[in-house]
Length: 324
Ligand SMILES: Cc1ncc(COP(=O)(O)O)c(C=O)c1O
Image (tube, rainbow, N blue to C red; front, top):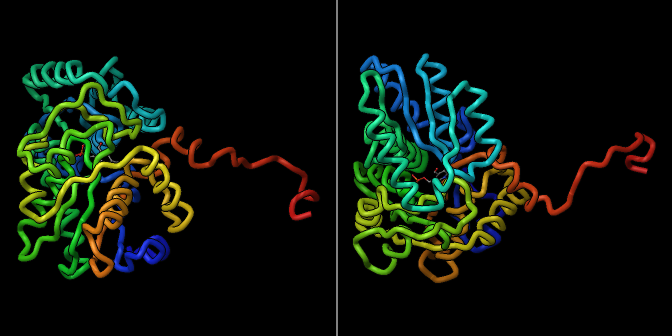
């Protein structure tokens, strides 16, 4: 959808948003889960083993419930309560792992253990990254197909938030099949700079961060997963990396709610923060058609709303006192 107020206000009149927050489980991960679970059904697999910071797990748990498949999910330590409760509501079996998503050694160990476990008959490991689950990730490429169909291929830049990098890579691969690909930009919080910094500086390889210091849920991925392929794909599309502070992200989350009526979680506001940085640096221009992905719903992360609301509340009062 076209931006009605933020784009014109910042000098980017052709700014638009690709809304993933309205998907059935509230994030872009539904595209991954729908494809991943369809492949499991095809192969008559019955147990889905997964890692998640919350959104992958919620999407997998929802589609697993529909498919009659049992879901066992290892969750990052700091996953927001709203995402945990959503996964539990769908009937998934969860464990929060101490240090997962913060300490790269623990994060590596989680992936190794789950890979071993998933070798059992009827089990499948579903991690939303090409390195682990390429078939599921092909479902995410549909974001690019939809943007191309909606805009008639007239987009210059697409800004994507990145944790492990799979989303950026999927968007780049989805566009690579089109005649004209926009520049795909990778935006990361400074506290989880595994891809954006190396991409910007000309490096070919992603890097681990020790420890991850961003508070943005969903983007706390300190290990290198799809980083190298993401760097190559973004670079060949003409895009680059952008680093933003958590404060810039929260400010964009607030602006999206207050100026566009878009209620997103902080990770869903990261792309906009990156586009604003790029505009300030003169890396995109006022004539450019720019799409920012809004990747997850505001209902996902209750705690982030405390910051956004800044003390605003709904006082209980008598009717006579309202509008007095
Ligand atoms: C809302 C949201 N946006 C963006 C991302 C980043 O995706 P990726 O880890 O594939 O880079 C995630 C990952 O969990 C997410 O939950």
